[in-house]
Image 1 (cartoon, rainbow, N blue to C red):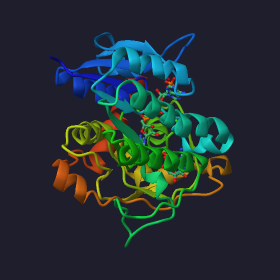
Image 2 (cartoon, rainbow, N blue to C red):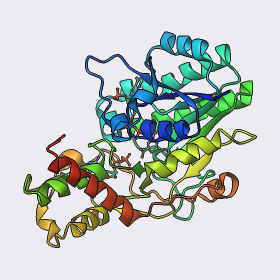
Image 3 (tube, helix red, strand yellow):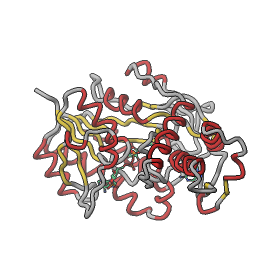
Length: 328
Ligand code: NDP
Ligand code: GDP
């Protein structure tokens, strides 16, 4: 019989890539969406899988909706990707961020514990939890957390409640501690997509600047399509455990900007960048670089797309989109 999976956050970036992977493995995929006046299926459309997913209604902030979903579907696997996922907004909306990212995870775990304890649970944890902390300039599963935003703090709660439900109740519940991962369907507020969209607009004569904050921050940027494979692998193991997932390379925001401009043949890129204090964070995470050796050893996972190719893929997609007049 086909396995069933429930994916929360199905309309975001990772949801569609994961759904595509599971559909290729013959899963029946349920996608949880909130109540919208105008739902946006653009990311699922981009991967051509919108009509292959059974949409179900639910909200991480609504405990009853999660209980009903888990009770009715009793899926083999739950991938909890839904979140208020933007660090910047978490400083503006700290309480909502905590309700969704922390309590929402507890509601989901309780629903599984009470109504479908055999369901395997994946929690979308994040390298942001490390914040200021590192172990010899990398972060691995043993690096302590030092979160630097309401987003990161909310995800630390979610991390530990997932560990606790595993230890206390024997649930198959795991954390994927994923470093930044990007794609042509990355949300436009995140720095990578903001840059590739801006570079494409400048190249096409549709804009004359990109306003950015801290250019010196470094991130370990990988491709979302690679990273969802690690999520899937974590739920196929004999034992539940937590894994760091990243490329093992760090690049600065400035390097990302330069690479994107140079790819479209613009060498004097500095004239297009305006530093804008609105995009500085009250407390910043200066440096994230994964040591993904456990994921490699235990899961057999390795990323395929390198930094330069990721930048090119995203610039190409934005150029194509804008040329098609789909100027979102
Ligand atoms: P996105 O922001 O693209 O997608 C998040 C999705 O969650 C959106 O579709 C959003 O729905 C949904 N959502 C938000 N609030 C709720 C709610 N209350 N109830 C139900 N759904 C909700 O994130 P990504 O796909 O990039 O990331 C997936 C997960 O991985 C997130 O939890 C994120 O924090 C985490 N993560 C991401 C990393 C990355 O680099 N991308 C790195 C590490 C962790 P709507 O469409 O309605 O807004
Ligand atoms: P994050 O790692 O989850 O916060 O992902 P983001 O893509 O939002 O930010 C990555 C880094 O880019 C952070 O260090 C930001 O401070 C930095 N950055 C610099 N300028 C900007 C900007 O204009 N927007 C965003 N989102 N980030 C910026």
